[in-house]
Length: 182
Image 1 (spheres, rainbow, N blue to C red):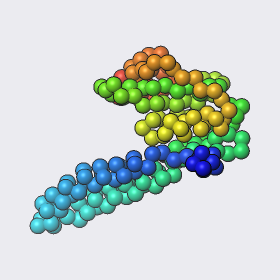
Image 2: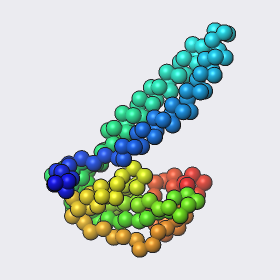
Image 3: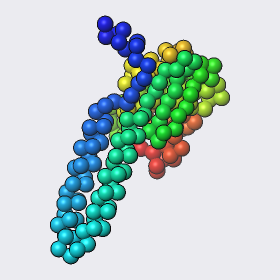
Image 4: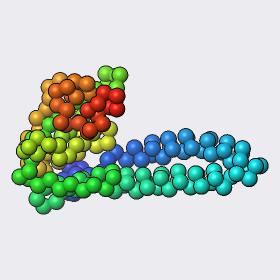
């Protein structure tokens, strides 16, 4: 029964626990800071500036929440549509796919790994990247199944430095530079 329900899903979403963690982190960081700022500025009358800053943080948080909930991977009749965190939409049609690569990438300074799934075009350019921090392994496999492309699994886990050296084209621009990546 559960498998039948999974097969009927036409839209994938990132891990839902990330939303809760993000909100808790924002509240934990901003509540004490703004409480102190209000406490310090109310007697002097400078509190409207703090209120404006506080409203800006709340608006940024609401925008981030909306972006999180709009991030999806949808199955369309002739392929897959990814709507990214910043609203960018990419349609990947069956004939565009060159390869599907699954790599276990070590997390910074630990022995833990996270899967990284790359769908590349025939020209080797990354079309879709699904990181294990955000997407379930089953979702990655479902995307490959939907695109009807076999997954090439790298036999050994790698570090970001090694991936940067061997396959920099798979990484985001900022991950290609040692100072900006993890």
